[in-house]
Length: 199
Image 1 (cartoon, helix red, strand yellow):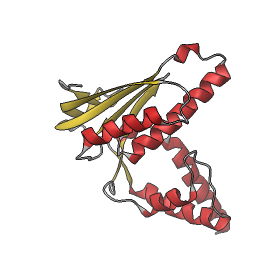
Image 2 (image 1 turned 90 degrees about the horizontal axis):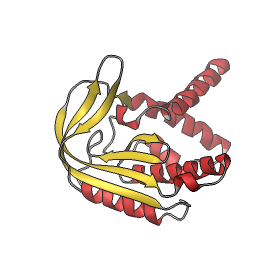
Image 3 (image 1 turned 120 degrees about the horizontal axis):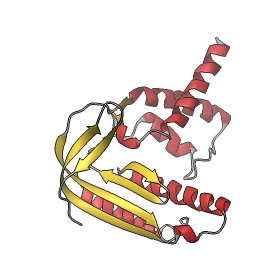
Image 4 (image 1 turned 135 degrees about the horizontal axis):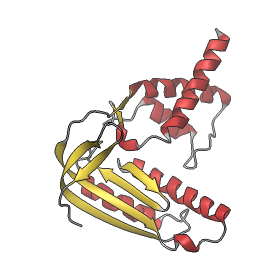
């Protein structure tokens, strides 16, 4: 039984790690409008950098809560395309190519992305994709956010004021009505937004 428990917890840790490589736009929770027990536990035992600061007993409890939290996660893989009012963000690091040294560049990107994800989650934003120094995010597309324009504005403001981000950011926001859903073909699909949005 002990071996089964250890194997199960290892599987949960692996699933959490794998989720980091999956676009957030295809991950949907059935408890978006309330804070789950797992999220409450995580917020009380984990700091912004993701470094665990609780006791071993609390770690076991967090793993148990996390398992139930993962059980509530669903994949948004349907082909339904719906018209919604959304707000989209694109963010770039200014002077990205001028950062000297590969290691320093990687550290700079990691810090920028970690802080950005923190602010996105706090504002109910969904990180859509990340490439090089460019980050795309959305509000009220995958996850319901009635005050999406205000939430996106405050998220952008908090990101630019965050002292843990060592580089200057260039952020653009657009809002309006768009067709939202998974689009593509059998070999490749992506949650997309199509419409005439204004800044």
